[in-house]
Every structure is written in C-alpha cells, then in structure tokens.
Image (cartoon, rainbow, N blue to C red; front, side, top):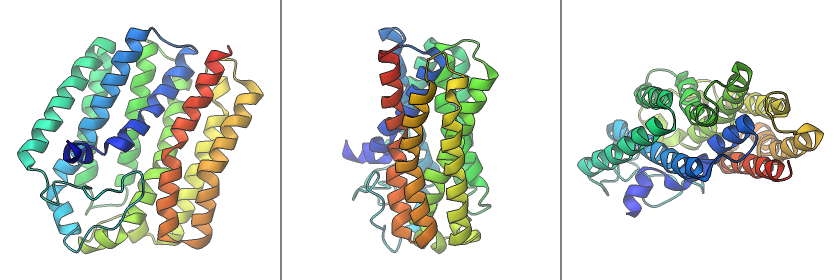
Length: 297
C-alpha cells in the first residue's frame, strides 16, 4: 500500500484538501450538512489521489531518465524512499493505471452527486495535468498550467455549497490559489529538482530564467497571494473583518513571505525546499482560521 500512496503523494494530497475546504467556508459562511462534508472529503481525496497518480503515469518515461543518477532527498512533505515508485520500478505500470482508474471513477461519481458541473471541471483538470507533464521539455510556461490544475479543487468546492456563486468570489479564490501554487509549490519544487531536470533538458523557470529570476517570481507571486487573502472579507458572507485580516496576514507572512524572502536573499536550493514545505501548510493554517470564524459567527 505504501507504494500506491507514494504514487499519489498522499501526504501532500491530504494537505491539499484544506484549500477547497477554505473555499467552501468562504463561500457558504457556515458548515454544510454533515452528509455534504463526508461526500466532499471523500470526493476531494479521490480526485487528488487520482490526479497525482496521473502525473507520474504520464511522466514515467521522463522520470526514469531524470532519476537514472539517483533521486535527491527532496522536501519533507514528499520526501520518501518510495518517491516516484513507477520510475524506481517499485510498482508496475498496470497497477498504477488500475489505482488511478479506481480513484478517478470514484471522484467522478462523487462529483456528480455533489454538483454535475464539477464533473466537467474534474475532467478538464485531468486533461490539463496531462498537458502540464507533456510540456516538461517544451516550455517553462507550463507552470501556468499547474496553477490552473491546482485551482480546480477550490473552484469545485465553491460549486458544492453555492450553485450560483458570485463571480467576484470565484475569481478572487482562483487568483489566491493560482499565485500560491506558482510561488509556493511549483517553482520551489522545480528548483529542488534542477539536477534531475537538467539531465533531460527540462524547461523550468529555475533552469530557463535562472535562480535570481525564479526567486523574484516566487516573492511576487506569494506577495500577491497574501494580498489576495486580505480581500476575502469583501466576498464572503462571514463577518471576517479586521481580526481575519490580521490572522490571515500573519499566516501569510510567517509561512510564505519570510521563507520566500530568505530564498530571494540566498538563492539556496535548500531554502527552496524549505519554502515548499512551509507553503504546503499555508492552506491548513487558513482553514483553521476560517473554522474559528465559523464557530464564533
């Protein structure tokens, strides 16, 4: 089972569930019915499990090339001796396909019962994930595709609790998650894998634009993330106000901006890994803040 969980990067996938939960809380302003919560958690877990597995399934051949010289220690959220089990031949391709299919079908079924429009978003996100992987040797702009994929979960969550959400809410959450993914996840992850990516002539921001430009992009994107979070009181039915702005801003400064500035100052690859770790816990911190405000509403 550990090999399958490694294929789907389950530790990281569980942390990712916090992001749609935040979006749902912002949209609804209260806890939904417990049946909706349970089905949403199951469907979200299934979707993240399937799409992370899809990434490795599509990229198996290139991953084998990348890691022929060994796999670096990685960042703690995803660090494991079983990272990339397909490339390490610790798991058969057929088993990976069956694992993906099982969870993808489960996610489709769950999405249909939550809101049929989510099925279309999930399928689109899966196609974009394939595109993202296939663009590895084509263009560093693929990082934008990664942002689109990561935004699909929170947008789906909004449509679970609001059949006709406001455009302002959807766009703000989209921008918030998009910038967080670029600055806190995708670019730092690529930075961490520069040795392996160089072996296959991959096109990533750190390799194509240089580490100084990558550090600038990270800092700008995460600055935009924190700023976007401060506007959430304008689009949510929750009475957030100044206390939320202070709490959300503090979480952003501590988990995003401080490690981003350290990366910008040092251009150290190890700091990029630390930033990835820290940014991975940012949605969870935001979820805790939202839950507190729902409880005291």
